[in-house]
Structures are given as structure tokens and as C-alpha cells.
Image 1 (tube, rainbow over the protein chains, first blue to last red):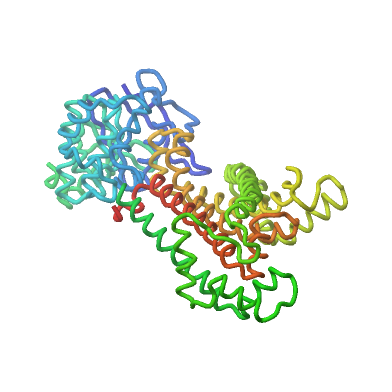
Image 2: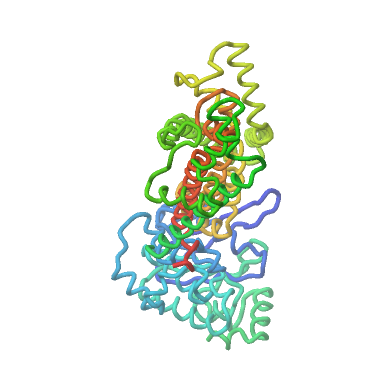
Length: 239
Length: 312
């Protein structure tokens, strides 16, 4: 279980995260929403141990998160791959020299609708949607218990967004990993997460079940976000 | 792969044929009578017209350009490099003797260049902008700016004349190779340091590296799998070019340090218009270039499989 307890992060004189606390159980999905600059990506970096947290701590099953080797799916799928390498070689990277389980690879490829020969191509030779699915495949290949998604859909077109979101949910049901999704897409968050955390200026404004958030946000800022998403048709688009 | 190899070999054949033809044409059309030059080199004195005509006929110079070219190239294709127009002796053994002095010197210079440049560039790029980095850049700039003939003279002045530590002239012992190898090697080290430093820094700036760091890939693996292959491509290119400059520098350095080798072989052959000797020296040099370029081409394809994919 992921436990983020009273974490604060400070970049020089600016406080980016203030006393952030949240938890996430295996097989569950938590979406962290908020506007740009709210500290969403910093939260991911803090969980991954990439930024020092002067106060608070982040653990997975009471051990440092790094020990559970969490996986990360990035926003820009193409720039997440070495352009010289075949996708197959990149996908094997998280195994850190361990033997690739071909059966598992085939199963994951089938689940993510990746044609077997696609992995022999290089990043520039596939579409962005395909590259993002391969990015998810790479994240899942070493069977991590925790997968962090940093704006996983925002580089994709609307149709591919919906399709990829469904594939992620389906893979989570099969693999049972805990998913922490950082997004500004409230429609996606409401459709696929069990809980929504609203982050504003480095603080968690509210942490509520997704359905309850859509029906009645607890804070004024939550209502503003929800209403803006309604106005843009975000909930109809993804659901 | 076979297709790529065949196309590279065909390119090499075209380059070698062009080199042979161009060298022959340049010697043929150079000002002055080649028969006179050969006769004077042979007899070391002013020679009568009859002797010059005899030399002209012997060397096949009276038969016209293409006949003379054909008379030279046909035995060459069978592995016969011919005889010197001046001494009448086989050219190839003389060439082998010359190479036996030049190749170890070139390899020693290349070794010095690599032994200095690789650690220096790695040290400099550990903390870009630091005094170590700036010092390395300054040293490399000075090294590139100093011509080999001047550096050679400075080294002779210091180590042979002032300190009397090392011999300055000749090639009798391995100690005789130290100063010429340093002269060439320091120049090679300077250009290789500059290019390696900048290509490592550029390689560390690739767009996908932050993603790797965020995913927790350790620094050593990033450097080995993603930075080094990218940085190696410009480095290998310049290494190939350096070899060309090295051959050019060798001629100067061999003259300064009075070493026997390819330089004295070539210069004496050109002065005497000794066609077979000049041709064999130029062809051997061209073969070295072609082989080096071939190796660089293959290295590129290994470092970045995208290179040359459309040739296949």
C-alpha cells in the first residue's frame, strides 16, 4: 500500500508541496487533479524519490517506495524512448538484465492491442497512440505493484484517449497494480478512478470518492473545476 | 548486410581507380620533362640527350599517356608493383621498409591522442563549466592552434637540446620515436578532446534522458546505453578525419626528425619523377583511407542502426 504522509517539497524559496497526505491500496486507482503548476508532477517526483522531501515520508508497505520498483508512464510517449533503439529493446529495459518472459510479453501485447511486429520498429515509425501503448507495456513488463501515470492521455487525440483509458483500466483489472494518475482531465479521472484528490498550490484541497466529487464537490475550488469540466463536456467525452 | 558490403567495396574500387588515374595524370602533366628528371636522378649528373631518350623509351614515356598508364596498371592488378625508374629495384620491398617506420609512429601518435583525450574529456564533462572543464577546453584549443612543425621544434629544443633527455634525429631506437609521436599525438589529442567533450555534453541533452531518470534508470546505465553510443558517432567521424591529418602530419614530422619512412620515400620519388614509387605510395595511402572509411561506416551502423538502413 502506498502511503504519502505529510510530505512537503520546496524548490529554492518556493514551496511546491505542503503537507500532502494520501494513501493508495493495491488494485485501486487514485486520480490527482489540479490546474497547471499545482504541484502534480512534483508529487510524482516526490513519490519516486527524485526530489528531497525535508518533511514527511513516502512508503510502499512500510518500505521506501523505490524498493517496490514503481513504474512510470509519461505524457509525451515519443520522447520517452531512445530513438535509436527498437521498441522491443526499450521495453526490456525495466527488466534490468533479467530474462524476458515471452508469454507475459505476448499476453500484455494482446491486452494492449499491440501487434507483435510493432516492437521491431523504432519510436519514429509508430503513431503517438501506439507509442503510448508501448510506454504502458514497458511500465507493466516487470509486474510493478505501483504504476504512476503522468498525464497519460494528454498527448493523444480524443478517440485514442478514450481507447487508451479503457486499455489502462482493463490492464489494471488483469494485473492488479495500484494506479496513481496525475491529470488535468477531470472526465477521465471521474470515469476511471475510485478516488479523486484535488491539488491546489501544493495542498490537497479535497480527497473524495470520484462519484461523490462529480455530484457534489466539497470545496469551492472543487466545484469550479467540476463546473469547468462540465462546460467542456469532459464527463460525456470519456464516459 | 552483404548488399551493404558489396556497395562499400564497389565505392572503394571507384575511389582507388580515380586515385591511380589522377596521380598518374598529375605526374605526367607536371612541368618539366619526366625523362630528364629520371635520368638526372639515376646518374646524378647532367646527362646527354641520347641517355634521356633511352630513359624515355625504357620508362614507356614515349608511348603516350594511356599506353603508359595501362603498362603500369596492368601488372599492378596482378600484384606486381613494378621497378623504380631510377634504381631499377623492385618498388614494393622499399615501400614495406618505409611503412615499417611510419606505421608504428602513426599508431603511437594515435594511442597518445586517445590516451589523453578520452580521460580528459570524461573528466571535463563530469562538471561542465568547472575549472577542470575550462582548463581542458583551453588546453585543447592551444593544442589545435599549434602546428606540428612548430611543436616538433619546441619539443626538440626542450627535450633534446636543453634537457638532453631524448634523441632528436633518426630512428635507431624506440626512444627516437618518443618526440615525433608526441608531436603528432598532442595535436590528435587536442582535436579529439574538443569533439568528445562537446558530443558527450550534447548526448546528455537528448530529449528522452529526463524520462529515463524519472523512471529510475541508474546513471551508469544511462551513460553506457544512451549517452556513450550517441557521443561516439561524432567522435568516430573525427577519429577518421584525424587519421587523414595524421598522414599529412607524418610527412612534416618525419622530415623534422629526419626519420626514414613514407615521407622521405614519397618526397624523393616525386623529385625524381619515379612514377612507380609515387604511384605505390599514393595507392597504399588511398587504400588506408578507404579501409578506415569502410570501418567508420560499419561503426556508424553499429552505433546507430538507423544509419544506412535505406541502402540495404
